[in-house]
Image (cartoon, rainbow, N blue to C red):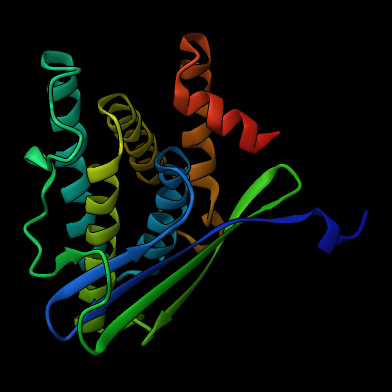
Length: 213
């Protein structure tokens, strides 16, 4: 079987920031599968950020992971799916259904399956490497994607997302942010949570299992 026959497009994510201080996110797959897109997109952004910007972003998600575990344990079903709750990042870019105004920054990610592995191809306009101002725009695209997810996922999937992020951060703490590690952290995070959710036969597990096979 050739390389091109093995390659399968899962979905394309597009995130746009505008000069009107709005953001819009476009993804067609279910929210369960969007958790996978989010992990791989986060991985690509983190590895390309400067140390200062990366530390800032990691600290934000560290707080989220702690909060979601506590929230789900004390109130696993009652939080409304559309509530940001403690998971709002305080961004200046309001999340909208459609793009409003001239584009300021665009991030595109294409998640593909190659053999038994997921890969995320990314494109940023303008490029944010070694540019502090545009790096912040890249972080804002993650905020937008995260808020987009939180509005859609069930409380259970929100808890799963917290677990995925926890494993992702633990990988970086042990292995660093070398370019040679691109894709490794989300792959191992998904594998770890997949085993846990397999026992419970959650909807997240069922969809990801179908995606993997």
